[in-house]
Image 1: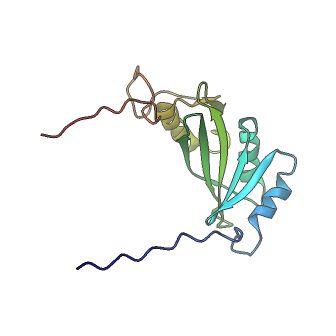
Image 2 (image 1 turned 90 degrees about the vertical axis):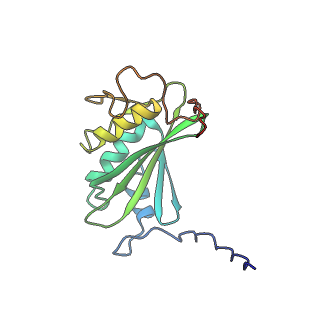
Length: 171
């Protein structure tokens, strides 16, 4: 006879995202980016900053160059397909301050384009090429959007939900 499984508790919501010195990162972002149209939220243990695609380079540059924020490391760039729109996520980390956040922007599914952040972090080059390959996001000003994962001339974007998933049967 099997024992009923205990129901796992949901992950607790974070009260506020604090860095190692106890400063509230959310408040610091609101202060240092008050002239840019942003929305700040907290999800689990990470600050989430949402902005329009036209502000992405300014937000990223300020996040990196402001000494109180010091987001000097771009962990990754990811894209989420919500069918009606694509969400581009920039996952940032500060090596000196030991805090992290995600910068999000939404793009049209029909013609998804946003400015490149390779001028802020050189490592964005490959992340943006991958997003271009898999989701069709065009990063305006990118130095080299050649395919990274797919071959030249590949039709479609396999990261998108609309891409046909060929069913197969094992034998």
